Image (cartoon, rainbow, N blue to C red; front, side):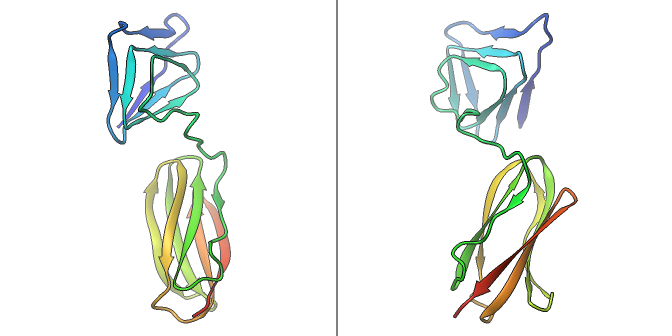
Length: 158
């Protein structure tokens, strides 16, 4: 669930009483637009607060934008470790919601496995690839997201 607070210049502050409590459940994102203020006696929960507005209160249990750094560009990192046996980590980042495809191919271009094929929110991701069922050799992994394609090479050594 994503809550957006965008206020016009006439009303740019939400002030709740000093005793008020804002609780954000897991997966809830409170997005505070530019020029908006959210003030409460306490802000808690396991959700996230993002945006360029001002937060007053005591958001001790909530991740804020300072703690969450959304990527500015699409990127695919080199897997690590590389070479590897039997598993490796592949990291990628998305600056916006995107339909993501992450696949592994052999040296001949044959698809070995699809690691990700779904719509993802903006953020940083990592996927573990277990190569225990394939032979030693050079493989490629390809990330496709938002009409962008990235390809990296990895080595399996058994």
